[in-house]
Length: 566
Ligand code: PRX
Image (cartoon, rainbow, N blue to C red; front, top):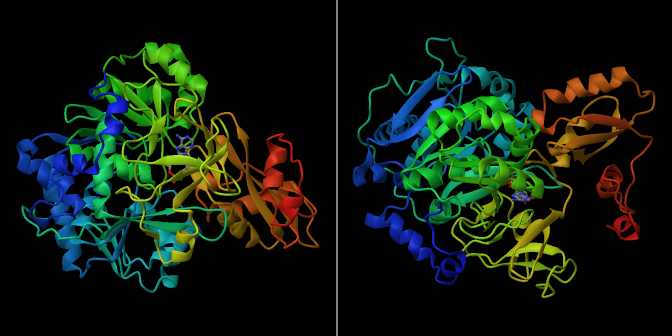
């Protein structure tokens, strides 16, 4: 059962100082969030507590205490500092979910450098765009992924070092260094960089409709929100066994896969393996997971495999289950209640918000299909689509908007102040999603307000896909939109107009698919290519993706004159 008081009382009496006090944030002038996720837990006498239980895809396991996390993150920090890494430098993490990923995340932050986590399945183009934009100085990676970086290295003059954390005796190329956390001398001490609360910490790239992905830049004091939301919305206590299924290449995997939970001092379990319902249930049973944070696509896959499979495992350790990343359908909430004896609670937030902002608070009545209510300290509303004024009429669809000022809010988009400023209207931060609010103050998600595709809880920008398509010799024009999918909610569909001299055929489709596969991540790969003579465009020449999308979803397109004038 929940260990948190009622939503109403928490909301009314809330002050971010509650979180600061619990964390002792800023004591002795220390604001660096890495300190609060490792050293502080040890200073409080919990160094022997297990911080991480890791299981690889072959079933191999490793375990680390908070003291080991502290010492090993010091090893990374010393190593980076010796190599000349300075506060503010961008250091990228590009690896699967191995222990080094979680521990070096803190090591990088201890030096004052900015950590830039990137999803290890990214292809060359996706990787290049993000490393180029951030002017990244160092990449930490593994033997499995280093080749992708080698292939783009020449185009990245500021990338001075590649550290391969599992190279062992393997021969590496020039300017690549083999590193081993476990065999280097233990480092009891490291002088943690005394970052200010507003100093940059994490840089997470996220996709929009237009242009390249943008780096949402967070600061050290984000931990004030990540800690208290992990405590109250995810209901984590130091006694729990917590499992966040997200990859730290995405914000859920850092805010709630590293920072939030470790600042509480909870034991985390990590499964570095592809999805399988049976594997997941076995994992929960084996480690006696109590709090489980996952995504609707996974829940839908679990539902597909049926209730019997659940019943064959001991799920009695579970006491709280939460979901994030995409709309959690009412059926999934009802199914989980029937099957596990408790519903999945929904939570809503974004890369930009850094922490949960709207959620089904523990103990609060869950309305299946609703995302819940604003987290304490968050002032939210929906704005009229045209006037950007708060909507007062219950149930009217508008733009989800938040009053700026919560601690984990991104501070800018890296090198893109203009785009950052465009996200604000009339003193509100506009999330880019549509929702309505009911009479009880619950938020009901309607859809995105832009052309970004949410496939399996991952945002994919059409621009990146279209750019990759356009590089193919036969492609004249392209548009990428989401089409309905029973499991992933949407998958990518590409519309392609060919250049004169090329005819649609299975061969050309295969050639295009193979061409873009190397450039994109598997998530962004179109499931289908439809060849068309030309694409619908506005009068100013912009592709009308919304029109193509509406057709895929069988929606009324209505009056297109406004679209044409976009
Ligand atoms: O469209 C919303 C959707 O995911 C977007 C944020 O994606 P990202 O920045 O990648 O962060 C994902 C993890 C926090 C949102 O703008 N989204 C997120 N949570 C929900 C959701 N859509 C519906 N219901 C949710 N609970």
